[in-house]
Amino acid sequence: MGEAFIRVRGLEQKFGSQHVLRGVDLEVMRGETLVLLGGSGGGKSVLLKHLPGLLRPWKGSVEIDGEEISHLGERELAPIRRKVGIMFQNGALFDSMSVEENVAFSLREAGVKNDKEIAQRVGEALDIVRLPGQQKKMPSDLSGGMRKRVALARAVVGRPACVLYDEPHAGLDPITADSIDHLIKDLQRDLGMTNVVITHEMRSVFHIADRVIFLQEGRIHWTGTPEELRVTRDPVLRPFVDGDSGEAWN
Ligand SMILES: Nc1ncnc2c1ncn2[C@@H]1O[C@H](COP(=O)(O)OP(=O)(O)OP(=O)(O)O)[C@@H](O)[C@H]1O
Figure 1 (cartoon, rainbow, N blue to C red):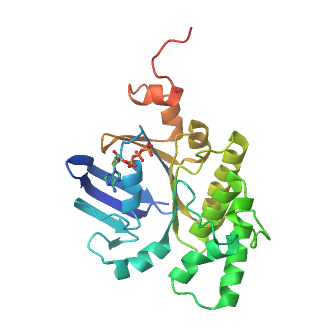
Figure 2 (tube, rainbow, N blue to C red):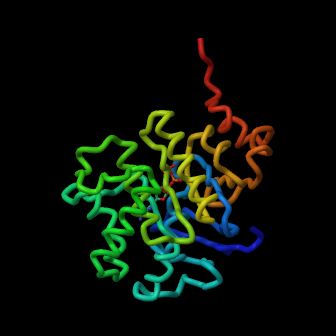
Figure 3 (cartoon, rainbow, N blue to C red):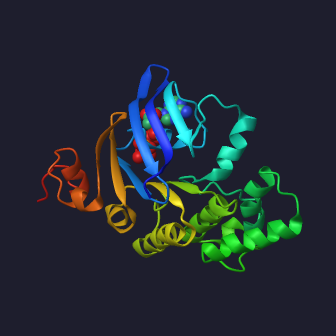
């Protein structure tokens, strides 16, 4: 580690009069797993969408692998999006396409045309997410956990250097959520992947994070290791870690 793969400086975003990001400074080191925590509506997804250039900063800058991307057009962003894969919150699979077609979609978008190469790379991606041989299944045939893994296969099939995960555990039972955590760590260990993960699952945070960032009202309120998070006395973080709303149980 030691070298920043993502560098965000003074990032601000507004939607109408709503000032969602208010000056975010962030570095994600190559090969690290960074977890992004924060209350609902605090701007985590909005921040994540700036990293592959899906949103353009209102103010500030975003650098990916040493390249400033905030001024780039759609065509110039294509190589950036090959470096930064994203696994969206709802999995976002196309229900009318098979698993194979869903995973191949981002490769075809990236201009890969050779069917044999596509089939091979889809097979490898399905192996990585532990769904070997599931190419012909339709999304409606899959469980929630399997759909998430197909979404992850789609994010990694282009062999990005970095994967962004927007609540990869949402709607999963604890065992399936744990298997997603293992996949995230396998990608980091085996392929040197940089991971940025939004989650509300504290158990996962302690399993996967090298570093944690807490976003509050559009700014980074706290940064530390999982060990520091576990013992923090920060008045905003403590109830979050304990899952304590402050209301009494009778
Ligand atoms: N494209 C958009 N247009 C207008 N408002 C938006 C847009 N995207 C996000 N917002 C608003 O920005 C705020 C932050 O949203 P965001 O999805 O980043 O929250 P979050 O921290 O990811 O929350 P959660 O944990 O609930 O998913 C919300 O009030 C949301 O309604």
